[in-house]
Length: 251
Image 1 (cartoon, rainbow, N blue to C red):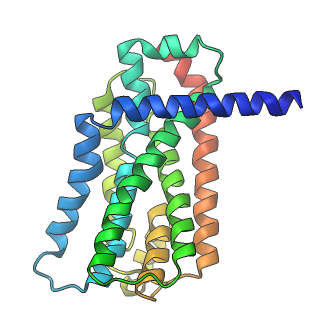
Image 2: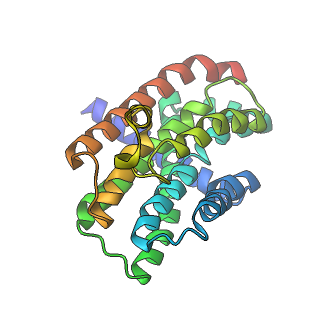
Image 3: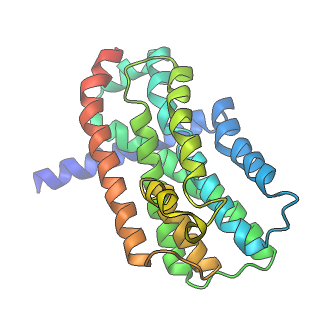
C-alpha cells in the first residue's frame, strides 16, 4: 500500500509538471514553427498540384502533424529549464527524475493529440470516412506517446542550449518523415525502401491511418500496434536511464 501511495503521488506530480510545461511552452516560437507551421507547409509543398485524392492526403497529413507536434515540446523543456535555472529548483523538490521525464512527455503527448484532431476534423469535413474509429483512436494515442517519448530522448545530451537540441532532433526527424510512407505508400516502395521504412515508428502509425481511411494497410493492425508499443517502451527506458546520468550534470 505504501508503494502504491508513492506511485500515485509521483503520478500526480507528473501531471503538475505537464500542466506547467503546457502553460509555459505551448506558445514558444520553436514549438509553433517546428510543431505546427513547418509540417503543414512541408506537406502542402509535396501535394499541391499533384491531384491527389483527399483520402490519400489526410493519413499522411495527420501522421506528419502528430509526429512533429508530439516531438516539439519534450526535446526543449529540459535545456530551457536548465538555462533558466529552474531545473535546479525542480530537482530539489521531492520528485524523481522519472517523474520529471513523464511530466515532460505528457505535455508533448497532449500537444500532439490536441493539434492532430484538427486535420482529422478537416478530413471528415471533406468527406473522408474512418472505417474503424476505435483502432484509429488507439493508434493515435499510442503513437502520440511514442513520439513524445522519442522527443525526450533528443534532450539527453547535457546541453543547456535549446538550439543545439533542436538541431539534433531535426537531423533525425526530417529523414524519418521521408522514409515513413507519408508521401509514397509502403506497397509502392522497393524492397530496400520498405526495409528502411520499418525502422521508423512513424511508418506504423501511417500504415494504420491508411488502413482505417483508405483501406490499404500494408501490415496487419496488430503488428503495427505491437511495434508502436515496443518503440514506446524502448524510448521510455532509454530516456529514463540516460537522463539519470545527464540531468544532474546540467545543474
